[in-house]
Length: 425
Image (cartoon, rainbow, N blue to C red; front, side, top):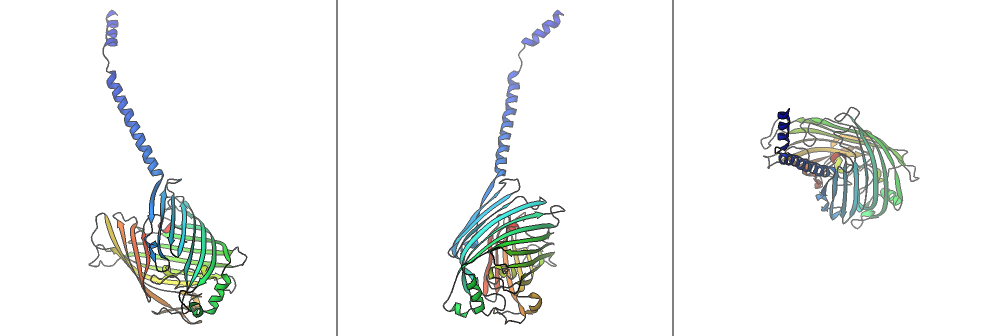
């Protein structure tokens, strides 16, 4: 017993390596604190990511003059996958902007909401007449104020990657403040019926609500540079005026892209690439026989046939068909890939596509006489996009069109966010 007590006392008085244990404990605590701080900082960075936006196409336009455009985009504003985008454009003949908020990523979430508002004013809206049979021999400039608000739901019943249903509510406001002549005698040379319709709109506020439902199916393997798959988008809707005019009309539109690998690889291309077919159609029918105000007619210019300036294609209905190809051109430039695009298109705008369609192609840009069929007009388009190695989206893109009136810059952009999910302002 005495020996046991002595042994215990010896252990009690022997030096114990407390300092070493405390040092290890302190080291672990510091490391945890550093990791926690780093995690919190990373969360803060991920919580709100803001990046500037620059619109190179705003620097100059033949119709809008010299200007500047830009804004900012922000992710993780209120939710992990949300997106906020605000842009403005200030030019000699156009001032405006828009803001939109996307609640999530449609590629990940089966239900995503989008709200957007936008407004602009310009005194250089080009007017060529109402419909493809207008006898106008020149164009006018319209002084216009317009605004839109839109709310959409993107619902994928079968989950992301399946059929996407999209109910939409749009509010529209339009005011025509005046009509000016770009050249002496332009007003006198304009169709008198077109002038009378414009004069009836000057100084009046027109507004209403548009309810629409669209269905979208996207099977492209890589959305930014597809080699195969399809993108199908169809929409039907109904607009009803709330300004006392009693105006109402229904509309339907369809857009389809079909992609397939190119049958051969051309010697100048770095990859085989893909070929694609593009179809675009729109039909609008108003209540009664009155002609729709020009700002309710579908804007069919660059979306219909690339290479024609804004205002060249006007009508209730539209149809266009295009065949093109796209591929990486040349060797990689560091981590980047350059993609070339070529597209041949024919299309036309109609008062009634079912009565006026004809498969003839006409290269002149003058309009057809009333009561006659409307021929298709041709166009060529060439584009160049700069992609990252992962090809998630084009960083820089430009598209030019060649039509009977010469070369038209269809788009010039820096990629910065929503892409196809932005409101159709």
